[in-house]
Amino acid sequence: MALADDVSRIAGLDFASVTPQEFARLVKELPDRAIAAIARDGALRPRVLREVFGRVERQFRPDAAGSLKALIRWRITGSGGNEDAVYETEIADGACAVREGRSDAEPRLTLVLADPEFLKLVSGNVGPVKLFMLRKVKVMGDIALAAGLTRYFDIPKA
Picture 1 (spheres, rainbow, N blue to C red):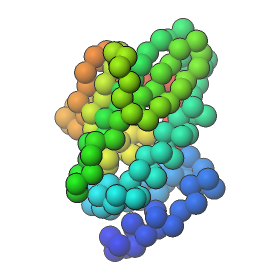
Picture 2: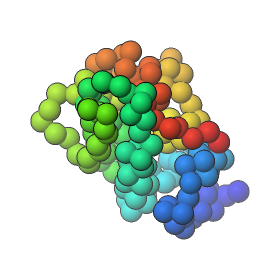
Picture 3: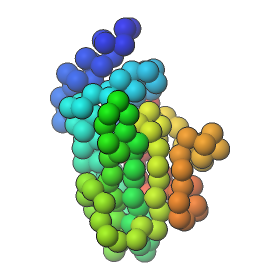
């Protein structure tokens, strides 16, 4: 499939009707160059990121988090003239809240990664340890939290 077709397919998605498993399959099928093209699209990239982070609270597993209290800052590095996107995930009291942008609070963990790696991570197509070993994610703060982060969420499998 041509690059333009891949980007058009994502642009035409009604994200509200796409299950996490379908999203994981879509990401798995996309070549890195298609994800990079989506990341350069000034309208599509924010839409995809908002949808992904909008699902985080629904996919949170309070039973797995227990008494965990952590602020996790995500910085998805921009490309093609787009600025870095920053989101924060706060886990406390058996709940998870997400906000766009950077707060003044000190995060327990900051993850810095590019769009392709971010989408692969949140769709279950790659694990955090592998990304770290391949130097595709920069981890600042609690390394153990980063290594086990996916267990706190229902991560789909493609």
